[in-house]
Image (cartoon, rainbow, N blue to C red; front, side, top):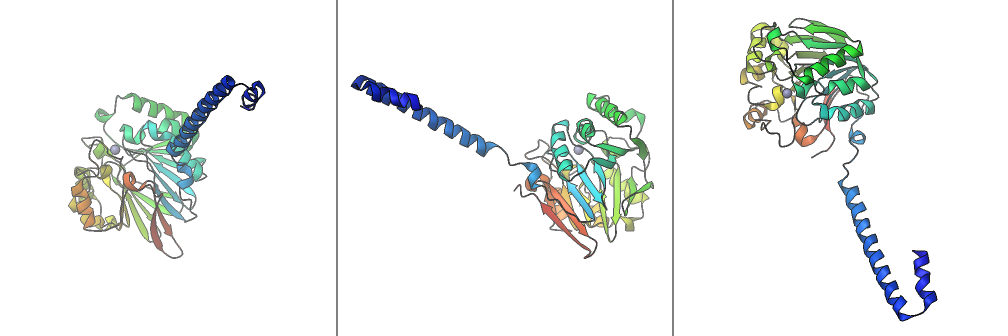
Length: 318
Ligand SMILES: [Zn+2]
């Protein structure tokens, strides 16, 4: 630019001045256009999701990660960690970044609630970055074992971690920090659909109870109601079953759970119409604290043991 600026001045004739003016005009237009493009590019780049993740030192935390259509939920209790599901493969980078932002380099537990791609698809890449010490699955019958590539990759990835492996059913229990975790379902391996094999966990920490449901539908809810002491089902926090579908969160189950906080994990404009309006209406009978990842982004439920208080944070997507 500087050299071109001097050539016409030195030449001193009108023809060169015209050429000079045209060159300057063209360069100005190019500069303007490239400036607009770079401005547009900056505006279109999504904000760094990691910087939006609330990091907290609360003793007990539940992070319902915004993974689009699928589930991935991080629980932290006294510094011990459990990842329930890892959504689709396409969400694995988001999950890895999320765990990294929380300073997590190893998981005490990873849980595959059931063997559908929107729950286990992300595990292979996540496990390449963050390994679990123990892998938990539900018991289920051999006839339901998937034949999908996603499932094969999942199996290979679990094996490569060297994690202990346990298949759980109703009545099994374990601890995460000071959290007591009991398995509400599956009752047996006899569930007739993969959704209803979902590993359903009741997590008690100090004064609060959280229930995680995978994609449990009403048949499995009924099995729980018929098997488990219903007084055990009252919960502070509920991860609504099956992305808020109308196949789940039946009234009989909700009547026992009576949740104060509800999280629904689903994608924006998903093709299944999750969450169902009828489910939202059923939930509204119990609480106005219903949070949806598609609308509010990452959902973070925190419990402070000293003040015995709960709160839900969101990353402000909406
Ligand atoms: Zn699902």
